[in-house]
Length: 289
Image (cartoon, rainbow, N blue to C red):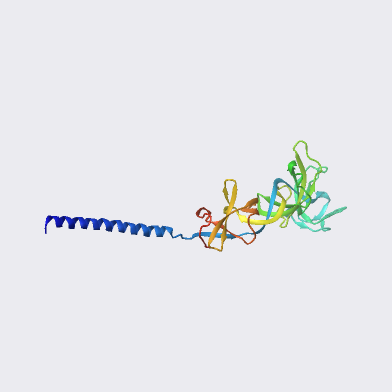
């Protein structure tokens, strides 16, 4: 074999190798690009738009007051018999509380009986019993509300009441509203009545009061499903459980992790609840809940 032929064979081999590498790379790049172009649906959870209750609150506080109170003062020298004042008994209306030498004490209403103090040295030096009968089925709370709420205050507004000592929410209503604004505190004196269903609220307790107003039924979505884009508020509406459409909405009140939808959605629409950050307009999705 001549030197010329050897050179031709070597060059041909090199060319074929280069062509093979180039073609292989082109084929590999084409395969990779095809795989990239295969769009896999994004996993999301959905929420179906529904109607819910929305409201605003005025938060304040006050001291619990018995619905009715009756003071009892007895000289022990005059006492013949009585109920046990130390047991905080519930006595019924017209029940005999104490029989005295020349009189008797009858409960004017149903309530809880309790000793305030036992003191020597009053009532002419005789040892005496001072007790109270409190009607606590309903508790009154006097609260002051800032004057800027004057236009929304009205009788029978719903009230929620809590105490730091009691892990329960009690319901009630706004009963009375002063006709004047206190010029010093710039507030309006009001009184609420609370249903003390388990008789756990006692006079003197500090009560947290939320007066509920602007109460209404409206469309609800979870707050986490809402995205703020500049001046726009959007959600991703689910289309046929396959894709999403960027949808602009108008939001109203927000209560306990839910937002009121004023416009942009209808009851029964499905939106993306979780997975917001992974989707865009027209993204393919897979609903996993």
